[in-house]
Figure: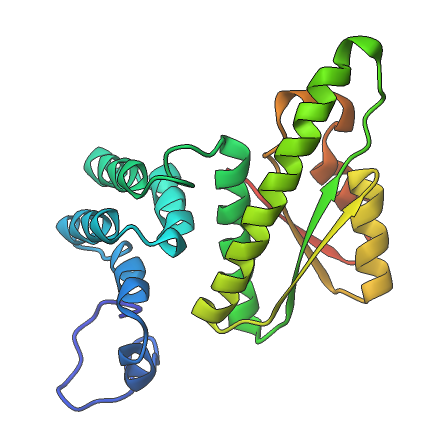
Length: 227
C-alpha cells in the first residue's frame, strides 16, 4: 500500500518499504482510497477519486486538493476536480484560502506521523487599521474568519482521529508573524510549518509576506510549504 510493489502471500511486513500490512488493513475504507490516489498505475487514482465523489467524505478533501495541484496528468486532475465539486462544501464553495489551509494541515500531519511528533494547529487573525473606506470590508472579513475557524477546527479534530496524530488547535489575534513566533518560542516547538499562500487580497495587502517574516526571525527551524 506504500510502495505498490508485489509481496509474497502471507508476508506481514513489506520487504521494500517495511510497511506493516496488518496495520494498513485496519485503515478505514476512505483512508485506503486516499492512498490509492497516489498509485503508480494512472487509472487507479482516477477510480479512487471517483469513489469519494460518490461517498462525499469531507475528510478526503485535502488529499484531493493536493493531488489536483500536483498531478501532471490532466485526467487525474479532472477526476479530482469533479470529486471536489460533487462532495460540495469545502470542495465546491470554499475559497482558495480554506482549501490551502486544509492541504497545509495534512502536510504537517504527515510530517508529524513520520517523526512521532505532536502537532499544534494555530490560526492568527491579524488586526487591520479601521480606515473609513474599509470598515465594511473589514467587518465582512472578521465574520468570514470566524466561520472559517469554526470549520477548520472541526476538521482538525476529525483529522486527529483519522490519522492517529495528537493535534492541539488554537487561535489568536494579532500581528501574524509576531504572534506565530512568540507562540512557537513560548511553547518550545522545534518546527514551524506554514504555507506561502492563503490570505485574501484584503488581508494580504496589510499583512505582507508572513512566511518570509517568520522564517527570518524564528528561534527554530521553519518549513514553508509552497503551492
